[in-house]
Amino acid sequence: MSAITPEIRDKLKAETIYRKKIAAIHTTKEVDVVYVTIELPNRVIKKTIKAAVCDMASKSEMLIGMDIISLGDFALSNGSEQTLFSFAVPPFKDKIDFSKRQNEP
Image (cartoon, rainbow, N blue to C red; front, top):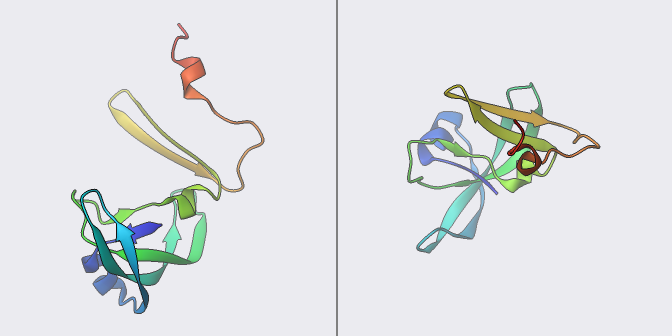
């Protein structure tokens, strides 16, 4: 499930649709669940995505969960001191396997 911080929920003025127990690293807690619309870098827009409202350990404001990632092909790569996030919907027929390329010259 995707997640947003309480500050983002407040900025979006998102209303709680229900509460849900979620498991964090060291605890289980009950959180609000809200609807959000997510626009990804390639202009893929997903509406009425349920997002848990919770504090995050890092400075991140959102966590993209498997509810989004499983809709298509997701890749995260690093090179030349830059990070590239790539996402395509629908997924491609051929799959990417970075481990097969790691030993290439």
